Image (cartoon, rainbow, N blue to C red; front, side, top):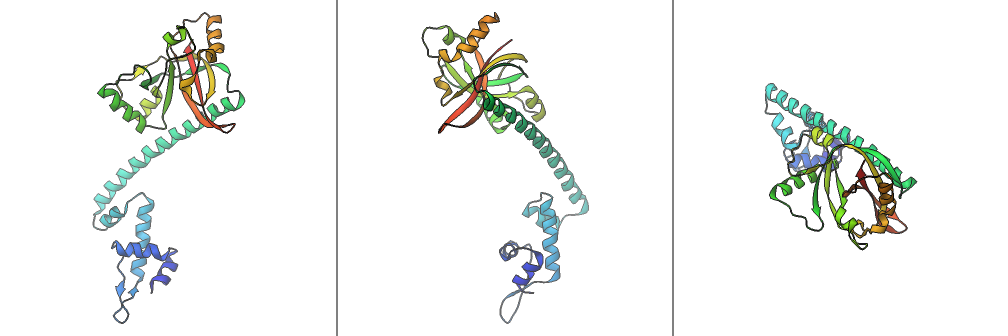
Amino acid sequence: MKINNFAKRLGLPTSKIRYYENIGLIKGDRQEKNNYRDFKNEDALEVYSSLMLRSYGMGIQECFDAKEENIEEINSWIEKYIEKTKQEIKRQEMLLLRLRTIESYSEMFRIDPNQIHIRYLSEPYEIWTFGNNIKLTKQHYKDIEILVNSMPYSYACIKVSKESILADGEDLDVSIGIGILKESVDLLDIKISSASVRREGNILEQLFEMEDPFQIKKSDLTPLLTKIKELNLELTDLIGRVYVCYEKDGKTVYGFGLAIML
């Protein structure tokens, strides 16, 4: 049958059939009188078989190879893709958890973007990458690459130094970096050695909405600093994370928190 009829019976566009023909997956016979391709029932079986293999995650080249592999080799391929799929399911489950988490974060800013609250924080690993007096080693760079490749399980973190809070004036020393919770490190089975580690526990956190978190001023921290004093907490660096980025009043703002351990 001609390519148009062949494609219609397969439920595929003719361009896809031509592609399969060009790469050698199917081989319609040339008619001597007009040089048109003439496809047979066996060609249809070849396409359906390849589509089935593709649906299992097999690449085009693997579709070619499968035709020349014995059953033991096919079984080895199946086992490899079972393990690959299990890992993908694991990552998708983690992604769903992350989506649920960011949903709760966005709800915080929707209700009250300037609230102060107490919440529990799991043990986090953090590497400070940008800000004043940031010095990075070769191992830092390696670990940063690992964490960036682990997005969205990593997150952007932010820090205001204790020294700048105690100093005169409004300006603050702000650093940003990348962090990841220990539970994500364990689930992803990654190894990072240069990150600083904070203990888990309850934190006192103030939320902020700002176009540029680097421009936060000491007066912006007044509610949090007042609460720290009321609770007789020892002042330390204020560390938090960037939760969401969104548009507000025609401007792009970052929703972030700064906190102290209780």
